[in-house]
Length: 297
Image (tube, rainbow, N blue to C red; front, side):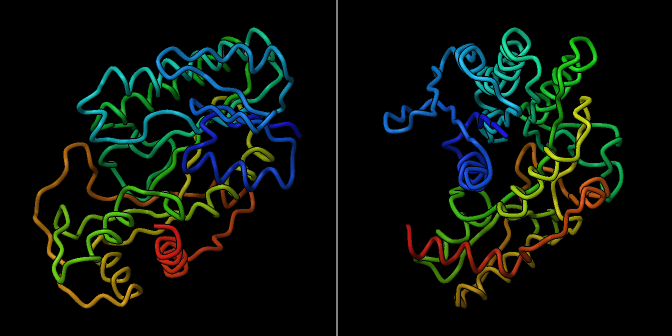
């Protein structure tokens, strides 16, 4: 199998490169030049052109890990978020259509398309209610994927990732906690602590991606990526600091960040049907993350 991973220098993309390189012929693409890798395409940040990728090579699957990945930033830089998360998806699919129509396209979407879900656990057919430009743009990218399948018969699939975490991620709650506990006996987090998230470790996420490549229909469908378990942020924070041997106080400011949902728990029936079983528990995931922070930061 021949795979191209777009956004290969990012958090999820780099883990995909590491995992699939042991099993397939992997090529990479990102905005950061890599002069030592002969299987690498560099695209321009401001005006990306993906034609060369599919003109010069025939791929079985394109995994799109690129794009902006920040709800707060999307509220400030709406056009940039639209360009990276919507326009570039269209550009990639257009290049596939013109030069390599047999190549399947796996788009990494987000649970942000759900916003505050109408029911839990969240099923893929639930009405979408995004709360941020980021969520709206991910929804639009999914619709573009469906368009290219229904109108142009390209194989597409979107993976709605809930709360991915793991070694290498320098943002969100795990990173925030790891930095705040360094020099203080009291830390303050956003929200009430009662908010919930459905976390998936990067190793499990990459396994899910492999299962989808093997088993999904690629008919424009959307599939949840999570573990089907919700955990309160206050419980996560307490578990994290316990694993870090930190004994200070955790406070919550009761301020909800704009664009953030209250509760998330995914229905992962489709992934389970494909054979997915969680390998990395939240406890083990926190331990691995803390080890990575200690050794690399």
